[in-house]
Image (cartoon, rainbow, N blue to C red; front, side, top):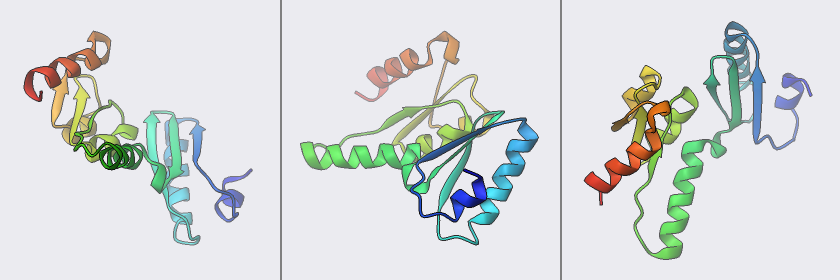
Length: 140
């Protein structure tokens, strides 16, 4: 379905991924964001890698979904949970921002590193394992 037709339809959109040259992806993002003014929809636009643009319902972003899960578990278990999250690209900034403790590996994009409170080794060097070590040492 063409993007404009989708934007004006009554279809529930959960996620759309567009893969193309970086300049085209950036143009698609600008065009999509301009549609927001014409339609009664809110989408969250983010790049998942240089050639990939993710478009999701604004209520279904990684950050909001993780926060909703945290709140659900807190109510269900009657335990105040802390949310740790790690990511390396623009599509992870929302998640890192919503987390109580957002982390970025050494090879993350600069904007991701700026959003993170915790910094780990590079992805290829065991970033998740390093985050677990940091959590055990500094937060438990």
